[in-house]
Length: 250
Ligand code: PGA
Image (cartoon, helix red, strand yellow):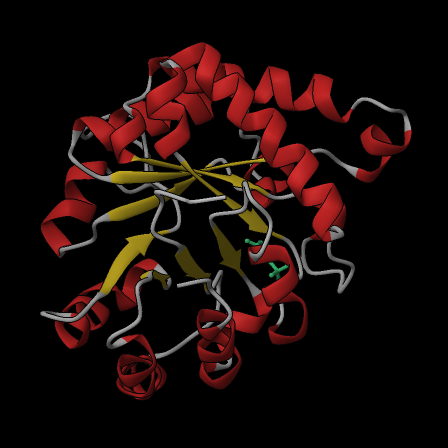
């Protein structure tokens, strides 16, 4: 089936990395990205954004933040405003990651507000959603995805990638099978079609995240509705991340 979506492979470093490492990492990553029909986004911790933006300038690697607040400014200790990310040169923001939902009280409503504010400032949004193991085992996967994806309604599909990240697959070494990923992605594309219309939905990139590694990336990325990957643990190793990028169909 012909695809009209450029694969997008993103690195989520979470709370890892230092100044010396970001330089080495990006310099090694640059040749892996050259001449590949793939978009690459690296999301280091906030402290490393200026260095990352400088090193990646002029390359095909875009830099993103791992979160952003819904207000432009104010008394929100520890948060970062969308315009602050833009000022640093970030082009993307991850929103609604399950670790934010699990450990930091993110709700569907706050996730939606963050995503809208990020897009309002011109950022592209990687909008994360996915079910827990209990929800999957209870047969509630699609109910959960329906609820979480309701937040897409206010968003601009041209500044968006949806990241399907089943919580049971994140950092566990237990990835979704390619068939499980395809099934969820096809469902999400159907939801996007209801929200945005069929044509924008056919162009929307839907990424898979959860224990993506060089040895499972090709099978996952080969699915019709899997348009890329959001990679956590394996993205910390530049050789592994480069190998995943090479698995993107091109
Ligand atoms: P993982 O994390 O690749 O380490 O499972 C993915 C993510 O949290 O985005």
